[in-house]
Image (cartoon, rainbow, N blue to C red; front, side, top):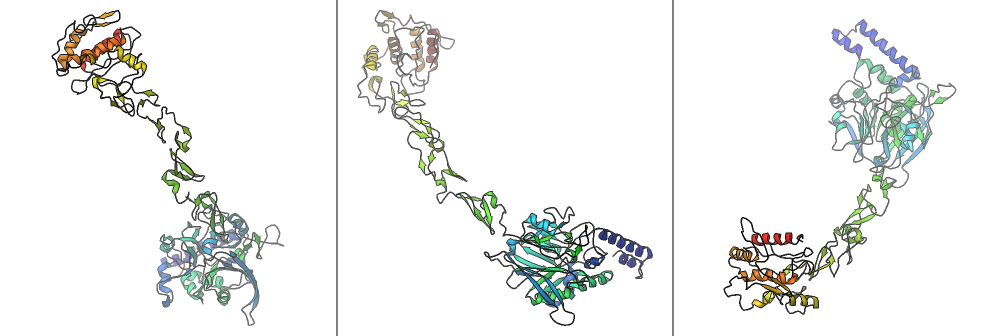
Length: 638
């Protein structure tokens, strides 16, 4: 190529001496490098482009325009691959044949055919020495790469630089684009993701197409058979279009040597072909190879690397006869370290590890455990009920949400239990029920508290004691039903007796009378105590300037306007009569409704004498008064 470009620049077709010398030196350097690597000079004949760079320099359009008209614009052939399962993955047969079959030039040739079922699942192009081999320019014996790939059958693949180890052409390995040749026009073989096998010439766009991407791809040199016809002459035009390489390419085609090829039969089986030989001594040329394959019913086939690279390994054992002498002793023959290989293996699963939840058996994932499903063992399935929508399916079964239990999470927690898997015991008393999710108690009528441990205070009833009694004279009601027709317990009856039965009962019939506050009207006598309204000192403030309970009641009456002081007075008199006196140990709570409510004051009690009362909000006046009482009694409001 360098000589050709130099001559063209001069414009007369005669190469410049300097260019010729440079080309010769380059060739000698390449020869020295390859021979130094253990390559016999005769095997240089198996390098189709020596000493130029690998591959033709023209583009895909040139190939398309130069092919026979009957093929139109299609430069490759596609064939659906066999997809049968069961039976052996591959069958390898050994042959010893006369090639050609008759005539004085016939010779004995021996080799192998390997017929491969379901190649989409069982065939891979592997890099030398494992993943990354092409990038590292690594070379490795077929046996080594086959062992890493667990290959049942392995054969050498694409071409490579014998000096540097660089992989030539396109390489796609198990769906990964390892090398893009940039549209180099050599014969290609590949398998697309739908299982279609492709033979022929590809544009760079074809190689990179993702609509039906290649999962395996390797480059050879010379398309041997196209649709059952020998295609070598057309290949020579497609793959060699330059004067300086024509002689080399002709020798490459016509020299006898060990050869390898890949093709397919009419059933869609992939066929690997290996012919033993030694360059210029034994083996076949490409014309003979193509005719032999045609006779065996091969439809499409391309030629792969041959000569000393031709290697076949069966079940990890070398099955071919190497043509190269071993470096340690010329007495023996050793296989060459080469580049990519074609590997036949047990059917692959997708993904190969079955998502970590199964075993790959003949290309199918056999899921482990009781709940992994799907072709890739990546779907958790806990049955048609799907954990009854009350849990999450895991690899150990249904993980139930709080409040549910059972193998399908279809059973609610039994009474008295709650939480995850219903393992926590409820802490609800007096017949209270707990929420199966969080364990919160729902109290029955007559009880309240976090654990339903408290009875409703007098004057309140119902679930969680949320309703006020509506009994005459503000008498207590049944804590469960709110009924006023009840019989009080002895302790409660005694308390009510001390308080003068029910609130304001002594004032029955006088509620509509005009009420006048006087000290004599509201003095309270209880046992030996005489309590005067004016004796109970209740200091006011700037807003409510009263000095004692008498003044307070007046102020409260004025503030509330419509609510008569009779009721307010009765509240405090009852409170004082119930508690007897304001001692430091007494917890006294006095509460009166706000001005804008329709509720009347409720019974109030000494904290030590009865349960805590649930009462309405304070009016501003009452709040001041209550605060004073609490301070006076040295107590805290509960």
